[in-house]
Length: 529
Image 1 (tube, rainbow, N blue to C red):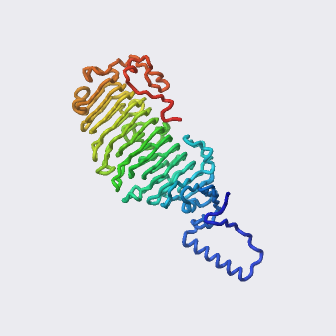
Image 2 (cartoon, rainbow, N blue to C red):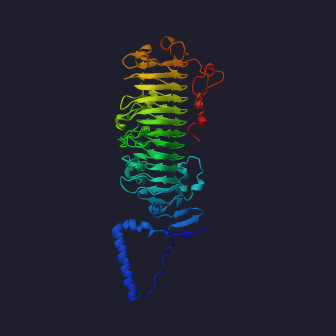
Image 3 (cartoon, one colour):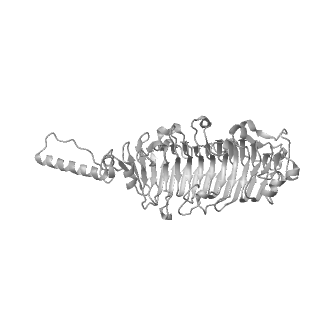
């Protein structure tokens, strides 16, 4: 049975006023007007007119559908009122093509199942498929409409909310966060939001002003999937599509397009009063990109990295495509793994795995440092392709690794096409380095160490006890790195399958393929659908 009613329990429909009124009727009407004016004064005229408590404004329907309810909020309806009344398992359906303005706050209530906020045309957005801006006609839009405020905020401890098929527009002049999960200032773990999911959403900054951050994801059991985040960029300040700094996960960032000038994804970078280390995270199947057109904008958007971990633990970064990064605010590293004091004096980075990814087009490849706070340990970089790492093209330094002061590092089965050093090591030593089965170019300096130069001196000073074995070091020499590696000439054929199509797998007839060297990645399946 389908039962349709207004928010609350009854459907209220306006009645036509009679043409004549008795004196008593006029008195009652005057009293009614006074009550309405008092309510408007108490709650604010705008809030009352737009349907505070579901009293005034476009009618909202509730459709009973088995054990769940579908709350239909039409264009101009009060989405906040619907959220305030929703119970476990409810679906709040907002009109595709309509815009809902004003910060929506997810309330903390005793939910045991998700409240889903979805577009009325969400069924036209296939489950498990990444959305694109061309599909925005199937989405409803939520915007902040108030200076400095996000489109979505959370009450302390809010939980069990899911968004499907929603477009989130920029904040006023691109300030702060479009979606803000958690305040970042929680001092009680019970106040952390949790079990909040975003699926098939479109988040975008302003083409002119940009946006500081797309999603501030400071909570537990968070999921961002199948979504599109773009135009996250700032002039004179950094920006990030997704930022996490005051939560310890778990968090899933899966199958999204993520576009930002500063860092496409940033973990850490601010102190968490609870002392939490961001992590228990899976970052998989995404495309992280900086549009090449941004290089020619004046004044320039602040460009830093494609992914940065300033503090983090138990993070798996897998099967992502990462494109276009150039020297601007920093020296053009695509990836940064570090322990940073701005994340708190007790912060650290540990147990990070970067595997099965393609990094294409960057001034330098990877910066790694555990110099600050509590240091860094146990980093694995395995089975990745780093292509077009070029100082000449992207104004960086063209190196593969810039490491310092780290405990436990495994670098294996990577294919690196670069025009700078293999390493530029500095500060403290890297303990326990395993460097095996990689394809790299020696170029001018190979393994280089600050203050000591290239070759054996660099290995002795910065990589004590390193195991460097079964690599192809193009243009290198055995006198520098031993006889357990291969040293072909730069003009010798490597046997790549199809480098013109970005396919750097070795052909079966390559001697190096038989030795288990290099990455084994099909570029058609990494980070793209």
